[in-house]
Length: 451
Ligand SMILES: Nc1nc2c(ncn2[C@@H]2O[C@H](COP(=O)(O)OP(=O)(O)OP(=O)(O)O)[C@@H](O)[C@H]2O)c(=O)[nH]1
Image (cartoon, rainbow, N blue to C red):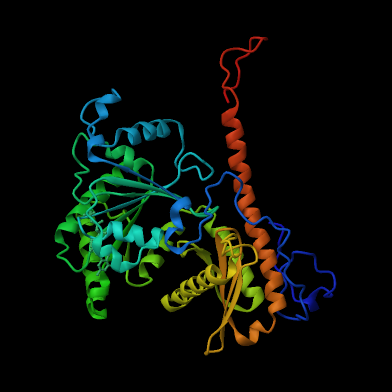
């Protein structure tokens, strides 16, 4: 990073601050205005990107959906891999090859995205979660969702940092049928979300959770196990806490009885009827972003030098926040940020597009200021095509908007640098993989180095 922490002007004479240095609050007079125009604002050509900003169809390009009919599951003999596979053969064949040649833990791999598995009993709410978070389906519409009877895989490529696949499993699948290659599934998995319906008797779900987690852990010790205690909208506050405590206790006791207390389960109270599902998903996704510590660090530097109370880096479409500074997150703050994003995009869709509908409601000029009646200001600015920074600022600090904008300019540049490093790595990997693989000896008889 070329940026360094800004010093108060008084300490070094005040005149010789380098361009792109974050300016400290002390001694501030009038920081230069942000000038973002020259910054590249988005992923490389060829990255999956979203052009449609119609609210309900946002995900059409950012996500790729594939489902496998049950009929395909029994087609494994077509591959000659050995009889009895009950997984979609296309999927298995492709993924098998990937498993042999690709490193799932490689953050720069373009071939393999971390997988997030959605598992749980039937009707626990798995498909609803996926539809509400990634397809902008309204919660009430999920009432009409049909039971999933096939594995659905979806590629989510919302931003330079948010890149993963979601696999929605039907509740009735028997993962542990001996003919089912669960090893292949768990080997490439980054996070396993197990959804428990809190409004139902959860004993069967707990038994299933235990089985799933222990099998998965045997195959891949790096999986993050995330338990969504779901549909908590139907519970009173006391009941929520009691349910969480009980599920937490029982799940961990089961693991301890099996001698597996080293397995860490994270628990979240979720509902599609409020923002809790977005917050929980944010935390799941954050654990899969290798650049997270860098992003958090940049946010910390940015807020401490700008007099900002709290800042979130949001994926605008999914409203997942991919990073925040290290001060604690409270739900109301997060909800306000989500609401602000909705307002900005809705207003932009109505008034921001050209008459023929051309243009995008979110671009490099997107910015919004909302003053609340409690002396707080919400400030939103575009960071990349997919990411927005949303900040909470006190009214008195917002008087120094020039300083905030200048520091934002530095912050944005730094984010782009982080992204560029990743893209360079990806490009060099691609270039390497395109080179013909030579084997055998060189003309002088020394063995070739295999590329
Ligand atoms: N009250 C409440 N209902 C929910 C919530 N999430 C999902 N539901 C409802 O739960 C029912 C089942 O949801 P699905 O998403 O189809 O469940 P699933 O786990 O995908 O079910 P299978 O496909 O059969 O495995 C639907 O009627 C949803 O409306 C929630 O947070 N609160």
